Amino acid sequence: MDTLPLRTRFGLSQEMMAGWLGVPRSSLALTERGYQSTTDTTGVQQARLTLAAQGLVYDGAGGSFPAPSALPEPPPDLQELEYRLRQCRAKMQHLELQLATLHRRAAPYLARLAIAPALRAYPGPVASPEDEAGWLTVFELEARRQLREHCGATARLLLETSLAGVRREAELLAEIVEASATP
Image (cartoon, rainbow, N blue to C red; front, side, top):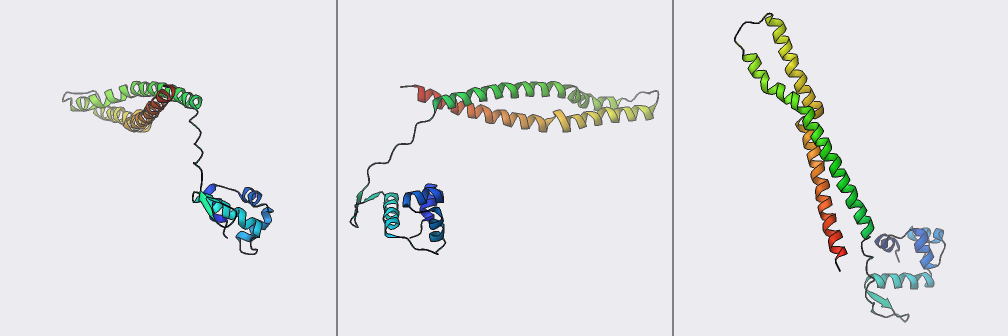
């Protein structure tokens, strides 16, 4: 009999499976590699496990009967869920603050981009056209660089999506906690 599928299905280590079968781990390893066959004792234990996986109980005489109902999964840990909800709410506040700060940092650079066309469109005379053109280029390029690298649309969208994810997680956790707390 092949024990590997049973071990995998139930998440058993070789050591744990060998303990169930009553053999040394090294013997189980040799059996799984095909170098050694199972004994009658290990065969019965393995048959019990195989039948149990099918919802049956081995009767000891070669037959079987239906297994009792499965054990229930432990209920969710309400304290852990509430703790995670508090973490999410704190993270939301932190992200909201970061987003507000980002908007404040971006405002002057957005304002530069808003007025740059008007400054360039000025038809009147200027003291030094070359200096004016260079200054306007730096004025605009610095704004674009700051927005692209630090506080513009990309940074804002990344923060907004993170905030949306944490908000949704908090909503789901709040629903679960509320449903669990209600008798």
